[in-house]
Image (cartoon, rainbow, N blue to C red; front, side, top):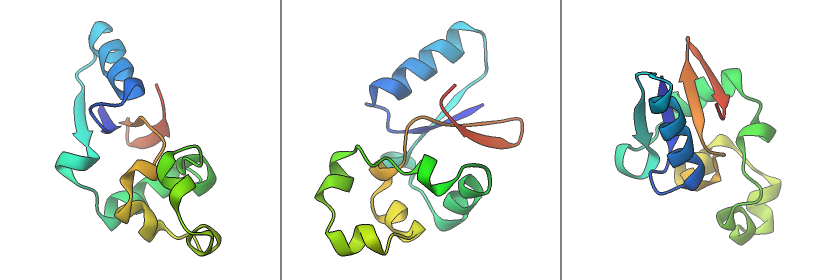
Length: 99
């Protein structure tokens, strides 16, 4: 299992702890340290609808210009990985939000 997110995020920490306590072999992919590319975003979007992947409650979303919000594209997720809801979990060949 791979958990994608930001290592300081409480939800990511909780997901890591839960997976480890259940004996699951888990890796953390920290967007800030490990990066994110278009291929990864595209893979996530194959399994998760954009409106589910996008965190509209994030401070980053609230600070975006109205024009960026209206013309939203996956490029914004590359520029601002904190717009991605956390944690994103990759397991058994599929992505999902949360455990």
